[in-house]
Length: 79
Image (cartoon, rainbow, N blue to C red; front, side, top):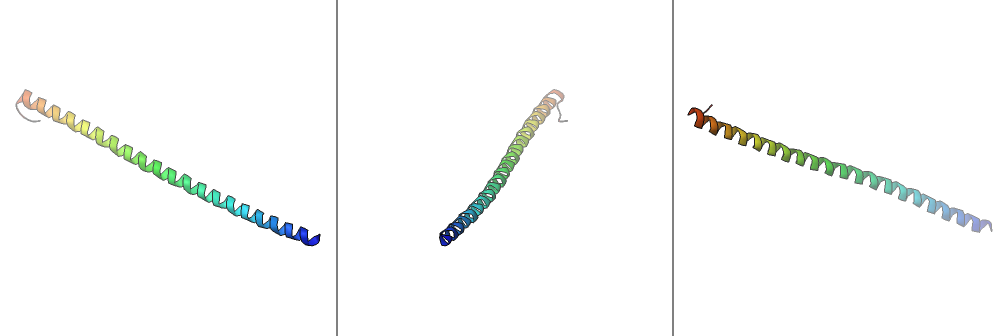
């Protein structure tokens, strides 16, 4: 009887330690998933910001060119 309870105690200790290790690994995996997702989101945000910046820059350049053409036609010279 004592040996049986000792075996069960060892078995449950083993199961418990394995469960603790599995939980720890899950936490670590969850942490790395969160980090990788935030890095992906950050890189997407930076890419979107660059795309928006390029778009605004090209719009500004188009406006400047249109203004320059207008002044050239109207005044006969570039500003």
